[in-house]
Image 1 (cartoon, rainbow, N blue to C red):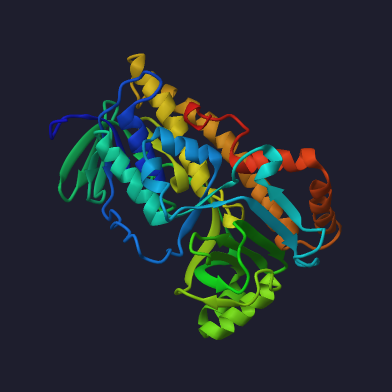
Image 2: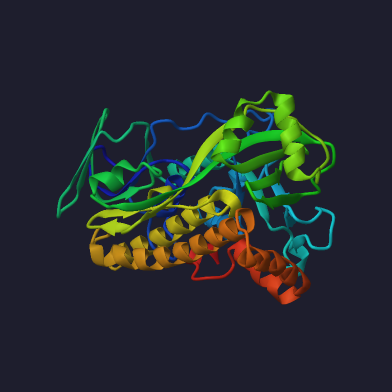
Length: 409
């Protein structure tokens, strides 16, 4: 594509969601030809050294996400020696022992799947997707967005390196989205008064290719298995507790972690720095405007306790790519509101359903008290005793139900 030519789509933000959208659009799907695409990412990740220890920032990829990543041409760059499949999930409330029959167990074997998903380092995922995008003919601009002008005929994107024009601009630039602000799209936000603490730890007991999660009155703790036998923790702690945990010496933090985990994996030892992430929910009131669409965290941010943030974003990318490619194949303008509203209706309803479920888990299991909380705790036992209910929840976690884009099927 010559410099200065109008792009079909410009994507601001080259994280996993933006890079995935770029790769899908540049490759084309379903018989539709690939489009002229550019991804603006001012800080592309450096490659991971093969012998480097696992990084603490990881994502849990569902089966639906795996399929999308295959369609995007990125899976070969992800599914190497650093990826960790997990076969089970063990979820329990602090009122019961982690070894009791009341623990809710999801096993891939219950639905005939080899695993429930994969734990992948964020940098590995992003790097593989950016590479897939450029290999498909997409253009990577290592520059930030400086200014944006949206007109009836197109968008003009100013960067320190020059000006790009496009028929459609996509905001994949996170919760503080500059594209969303420039387009005048508003959001509803609400703080959880919690901070997610992320770190890698060694455990005395093997993780058994299992994701472990405990609900407590002051937050939620998850252990995600890593390929070298260690675990990545995501401890969503109430802010007052989080301040103490972040300030504590490493050995004191490990002692608090042992208490919070009820020694489900034995004694722990901190391996990395602790990274704090204040938690809040964000929902854009509109996902689209003329020549503008929002994806991923620019459109919605959910609580991390279910590990669905990136998976929701990758499904956004697959749905938007499917609709835009189809529109261009019909010789329609990909930036027209009539085209983009179909994406908004599709994804906004799916995200709302997942967000409501996650809110209920946080309210009634992590922080709840009283009859509704006790009912929710009993519900975990009911699910555990019903093979059909377990299968239902496993299929939701795998991303195999709901209105799926073609790339995720």
